[in-house]
Structure formats: C-alpha cells, structure tokens
Image (cartoon, rainbow, N blue to C red; front, top):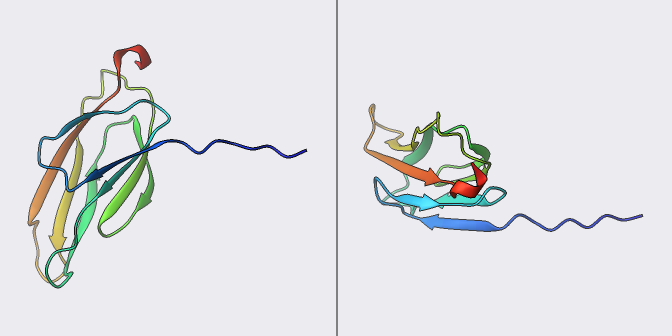
Length: 105
C-alpha cells in the first residue's frame, strides 16, 4: 500500500524590511530569503524566534520554518541578523512579526 502526502504550502518572503508583519496559517512553510550582496562576505543568522515557528532549513542567505498555531504568551519577533565574516558585530537586524489567524490560536 502506498501513501501519498500533499506537500505543505510555502509562503516566500524576499528581502523583508525591518518590522514587516505577515499572517501565515499553521501548516505552512515560511521561506525567508535574502539577496546576496557585494563579495558575499555576509551571512544571515537566526537569533530568536517565536515558539510557533520551527526551523526546517538554515542557510547563509535564507531560512525555512514550519508554522504552528500561535500562543499569545509568546509575542517574540523572528529576529534575523546579518554579519560579515571578516568583522565583529552585526551589520543589520531584521525583526519580523509572524501572526497566525485568530481561528488557529
């Protein structure tokens, strides 16, 4: 007997601005992608995330999360930081607010 499963829908966010707010339904894959800049010496890092986002893939210029139902007690933003490999400190911070529709909370 073979079982066929339908892949989770994917919502892709390209180069999000700081403070970007988006609504994603549970069961969706959220892909956050950033352009490569200059000589490619910078890398994006996941610093913090709300509990309803589970990392599936982490790369130098992109991330994929699986979205679950949101608990209002955890209102942390998704925090991504760009750092150059040849310097200390961070060059850029992106805090993103990922909401889940009320019927799923």
